[in-house]
Length: 326
Image 1 (cartoon, rainbow, N blue to C red):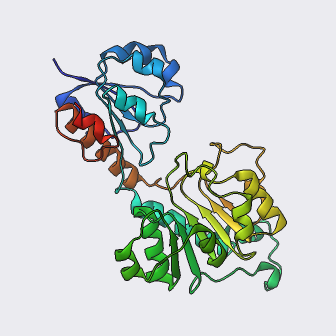
Image 2: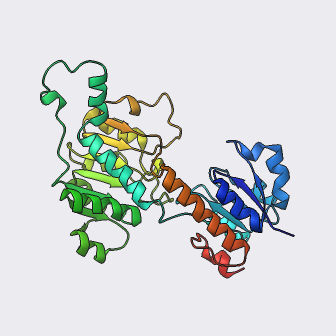
Image 3: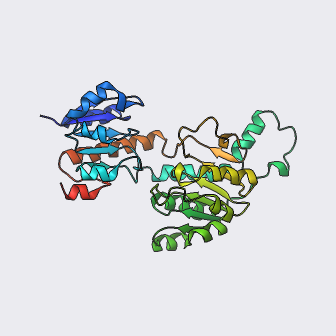
């Protein structure tokens, strides 16, 4: 008898066909799956779950006694109860590597757009306000030759820094739990403590994962250490930044501008002032949102869940202790 996989994320027809060769699959769509009677009825026969955006609760896990593996189509897994899954012997897989370059592209798009006021000035033209040659009121700031401060220097942080150093001649500084000597040699990067990095950098980009230690890592005190000309970019997780403090820093001119792909609450509340501020470029969490990358992420998730349910170690396993104790 084939093992059963519940699909709750976008897979291509080819990926679904691949899974169907070895497993029984049931496909679900919608944003409130945990409350869907059909999904609830399928949980008792599920050996694997593949998708993203599903809220994992003890009740859901209790309803799925056969569950062996969860494959999220994302690199982040802060919304999964890793310790609880490990305690139950359930493997958790994610999809790093395949989205690194695309997400770094998004980060640098935000750097350039915020520095050169691309969105603001595109609106200026669209409104018909361009009636004469532009003056200082429309000037931006250079990116090339400036200091880029990376908060986090993992795969994505290094990819962003590589674009800055090799493409724009930027000086790279990084704050990271461990030194990165190879990247220091490649990019001329220099490690700094967080406070020093904030004070030195012209552009500050956040790429650390969200953990209890990094939640609200950047708040009022940290914005106070930045240059008034600094541009702040967050492509990691919204809750790493105290949003109220960011808004205050932008309103008071403590920093020049911000480029944001993530927010404390997503989708962003209509009451938030951020998308209406002229010195903010706000995107709807599109870091990996290209067709090529999303298909590659889904393919990696398919590979992970297939290997796990066949008794082989997945390519990208979050809780390795669950595999060792299996």
